[in-house]
Image (cartoon, rainbow, N blue to C red; front, side, top):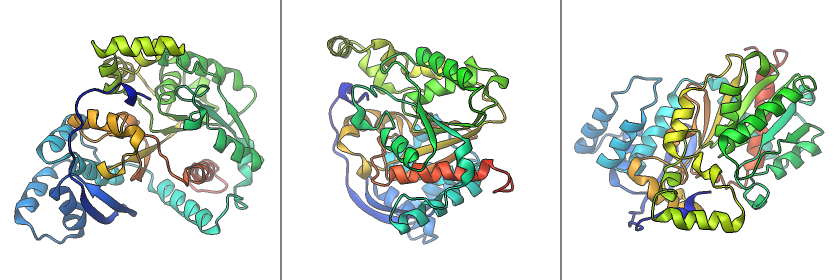
Length: 373
């Protein structure tokens, strides 16, 4: 959503072929450094053939197990070695981090079976799913640019075919995070008497909107009917692309463009990094809420054209998806399902199938009659 307003030159990034597997996911693309290639293809396979690289990588691995590296350390790795090395390191650590691996395994099993079947009929979709409302919080410009998938139209249509209940929250498509968070909070309160089980789904800019609604505007008692929240590539702690877009002299062009389109500049202002991180610090999520981070993790060879400019402008800070830094797109301590090889847009031909598989996984986890927790 912010890539149009990036600035600076486009550096030449090396394209070194790489092929391997990490956390059960196949990787076949290009990377920006030899040490990144070596890390995946040799070091992680216990094939230590380069003493110089081995020593450097050994020194990197000082963070305790089950702990994600912080933003500063990922920036250090990106600048010292390369962005793709830092991204691969983040991939490995997030696959080892504190998560309920039952959910991750179950998701991959359900998705693989549906993929093998070659259709979306989901004859095995749990009957308990009919008791849930799948509630979607749309993202940036979901009315103006529905082709981006910001309105979740395809997945909602699929759920309708399955006979399941889904609904879209009508937020202001270019409104501020705080404004839409209040709309979401009010809608959740309204639905409390109508639906006892809700699974909430957000993506990109609606991520911080849902986060503020659940983590600040509503009390735990007011969210007892919200059983799970799926955060898909949320810009939870903002984007430095918004910072750049609102810095002179670029800002005059951006404000003029927004005005000509009839968009509210408050939406862009609300996802600046400083404001977003300050907002995020105060959030406290209810203990009963199951939170899933669904996160695209791209290497430099995986960035699609719409995200390329944003990716280049964020590289100085480390691993990013073309819109925000990877670490800023997740709720710490929540269950993370990484999708290696995809940028912020998650333009995956199987995305609808995967989201549906994940929703089925959540039902299986939430229903004690089908899964022992």
